[in-house]
Amino acid sequence: MNDDYLWDKSGEPDPQIQQLEEILGTLRYQPKPLPLPRQRNYRPWLAIAATLVIALLATGLWLRIQNKDASIPSVAIAQQKAPIIGPALSVSSASPDTPRKPTPRTVKYDRKEAIAAKQQLMFALRLASEKLNAAHRRTQDKRSSYENTLPN
Amino acid sequence: MKTLCQTKLALPLIALVLIAASAVATSAQDSRLQLSSLDHLAAKASQTVDVNIDEKLIRIALKVFSDQDPEEREVKKVVAGIKGIYVKTFEFESDGQYTAADMETIRTQLRGPGWTRLVNVRSKKEGSLEVYLLMNGETVGGLAVLGSDVRELVVVNIVGPVDLEKLVKLEGQFGIPELDLEPAKSKTKNEQ
Image 1 (cartoon, rainbow over the protein chains, first blue to last red):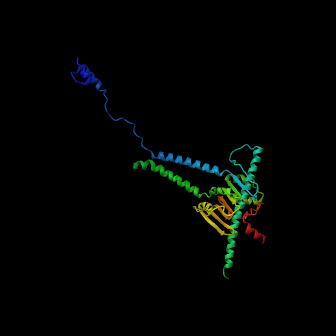
Image 2: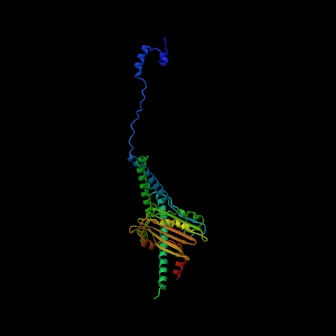
Image 3: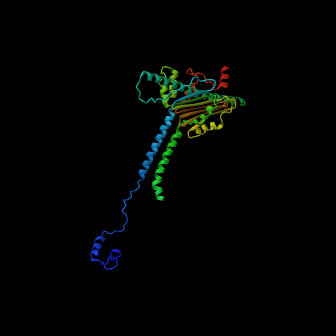
């Protein structure tokens, strides 16, 4: 028997093989596009929401850092030569909102802290007041000297 | 591509820009000045005073103010509503230790929206003194004082509503020693 048909479909075909071919032919590879899952519609509101959340988080973080920096209390009086203001005051930061067990030691510490803060506050207000008065005084002086130059 | 830019990128970008703009606007209304640009002068100064009192510290300080004492009651009124007081003073042993650019870094901030220069006194003898106010409508939202002499530099920044009249009256009270920051003129006047 000639087996060429099996190799290259030449020669006389065997009816059994033809029958098999017909049966199996239905399972032959059929080229067709790959069915992909349907692409989701883009939702702009989702992107906006995500951006808002990220922006809010970033702003919150930034503000927190800013507040942290600002809440580091400090009065630094660096003196290389003659002291004018007095000893340097140092106050450590402790949030008044933080609940703490009021032991006599912490109460004493709180009071010390408050007194130091008061001194700093007084100094700053005093300086601001003095500068404002100086500005007022100097403008008054200029004004009176100008008025004196005016002819009667 | 155009559609992609319009839909996917434009809207979040607009949102981000709006948020950033509102954040900038909010911070622009804040009367706190950035004084860190002056920090380098501390190395040259013979004396430096750096006071940073934020709202928390003010609250802590107010705990020990007495309501019985009329003077301390007055300070409490002045301080009420203030969100922070920041002071930097530098005293130098020789002339020309700071430059106009140092002052300019502060003045630039005071050219922002809301700030008004109330007083500007300049003299070769006594140096210059500038008073700025941040106006929120008809109320004062902040104060800045810039004082400069050949050997001295003073910046005072009060954040929050300030009653100028009451603040001016505080000078010479509370037993706080004279700081001698206006030596020549005030002394001669007092002595006369």
